[in-house]
Length: 92
Image (cartoon, rainbow, N blue to C red; front, side, top):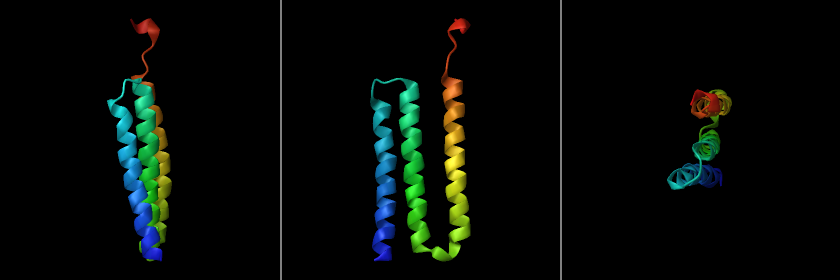
């Protein structure tokens, strides 16, 4: 039962990863593409780590640290990339 749930979370994580790449081929703005990729990557990675947490519970301190670090890192990285891709209209 736990193995099935663990593998299910890992598969959901892979689905999120691939789902986030689909907007990259669209005609939307760079910021929309960046946002959708960042959110899906974060959710996919966190889902995979949660699956690993069920699979190897003896490593819970490291996996919880990985979850927290991943949430903070991807959030900050998204803001930094969005700020860098923003072009001020006065710079023309």
